[in-house]
Length: 125
Image 1 (spheres, rainbow, N blue to C red):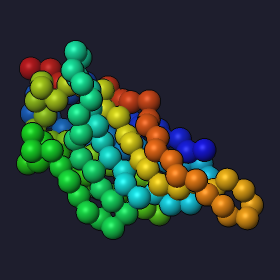
Image 2: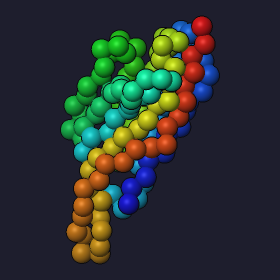
Image 3: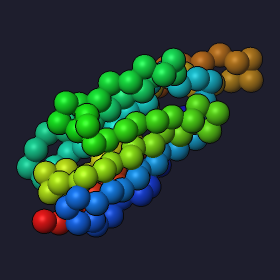
Image 4: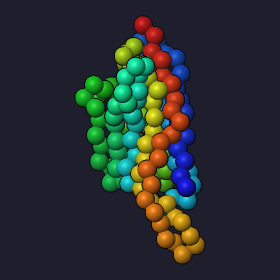
């Protein structure tokens, strides 16, 4: 199985910065896409940014000029650098990943998609 753990959330004033990290662990064969989503109180979960194993990046228009996603494939980690934060960015931020994990010693694998537990980002005005 595969697990994701996020870190780096917290309380910041409007205009400030935070950096989130997410690490994947387990019997990972490969990870294709890793992503950040967020869910504000009373709202549905929305995509923030994605990055593929090939380095292709997609960032939501609402954060495109302020947030940067990056990846360290060797460490199975992604990061989200968030600058010029606004109160509207307040949400629980979730890491997501999909790929293949190893199921036996012969190297057979299955596909997976997993979510982290989320990390809370609160931006005060």
